[in-house]
Image 1 (cartoon, rainbow over the protein chains, first blue to last red):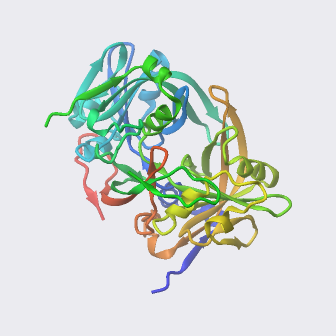
Image 2 (cartoon, rainbow over the protein chains, first blue to last red):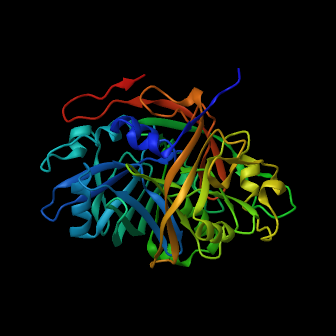
Length: 215
Length: 215
């Protein structure tokens, strides 16, 4: 069977029904990370939100970014982060992916997503925001900056990584973490979750030198 | 066997050997997208670079972002984008993941990564930058803005999506794209590639209502 290539141009994109376009465009960037962001308000109300826009920003200093939409269900998350300067990022694994997805429901501010979906808040040392006990790779983050992206009024939120907590089985000799061994999942589009199967690690690429599989 | 939790604090992070820290911190955000960015210089020299930092920024207008490091091997990519305003983003699939990785070698500006790694440039209508023929989901992008992130001097590059080209088998009735069916891969850490296995699509979450698997 020969596949046919579909072409969708900018006019067709603009005229699409809103939900159809959201599904389509959310699929274009490829697989996305699945993380739960834990926060707490100044009055002690905890909040938990699944976010698929967390991305690596730099290793030295260790910085992580995510995109927050205006008026999204993560609005409590954002106001807690701005008020306290503290949040946690917790990788979603295949034991908790459905509970993680349920945090995207539009709960009232006084409802606690941890309790509503059945995940356990956990506190560690000086980190003010709650971690997710069921996550096997998580870290405390200190807010460093947030800036509006004028093109669509989303916010880019950047934090520095303070305290990393992870299952030791996944930490390798070279510092890499085998997140597949932790059953971390990824997301495509708006609502599709995937586990992974490793193809391999590849050697550092150099011109004129064939790459090789490592470990 | 009971797993032990490792705690790594900010001082330990700061004191790590540079490559060890790069492996570690690059693993924290979770799975990353794997994309090839195609560009062309004003004099007609094509360039191709693998990027794991492409992320969805918004559906209406359809915007996509990526992070460019200063002095990275993608410096030709960035200067071409700024000069022409045009680039393509091409999802990496399991047929071309090793060739895609090889584009990260530090080739000279006059070397063409397409030829060096054995991928085929392909042009479509008005889009100035080359696509990757072997990619099954790709789109032309028009540069909208770039801004420096002062915390670590990386650049956030944002573009609007113009022409989408994809295999019709993967386009579903609701607009979502089954990128797993296209054998798109994802990345963890600096150098590990993964194929995926679908856990399921989940219904739109609402408070007090159990989520269900869809399609």
